Amino acid sequence: MIIKKDTQCPVVITPAALSHIRQIIYQKTISTDTYGLRIGKRGGGCAGSSFLLGFDTPKSADQRYQVEEIPVFIEKKHLMYVLGLELDYQEGEESGFVFNNKEAERQV
Image (cartoon, rainbow, N blue to C red; front, side):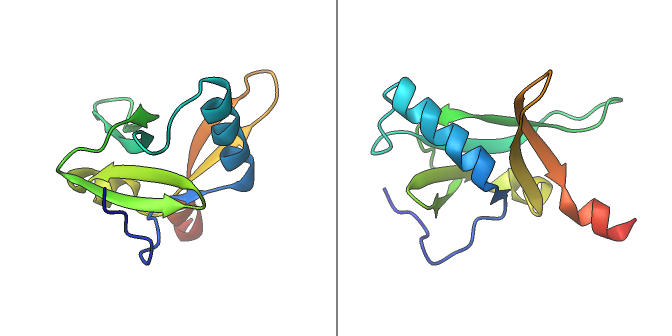
């Protein structure tokens, strides 16, 4: 598996998100030799874009990155939609992963 270690991942993954990703990898005994974190765009429509996040094996159409020790896969056709996003983990009443659009925040 070829991973672009010298190329920066187009999605910024915060320390909180990395910590929870590591916990999931450990708890579910996910092999990062075989699986990586898949980030992408899911449909559009009236509610706007939503994004996908999960563990998957690499596909031939993927760009592959390494964020610390975690392989990250992004399908080439999704790159323009995820460029500049930040993946964070927020705790509270509804804890979970969230995508923040830092580019849109800068333009406001």
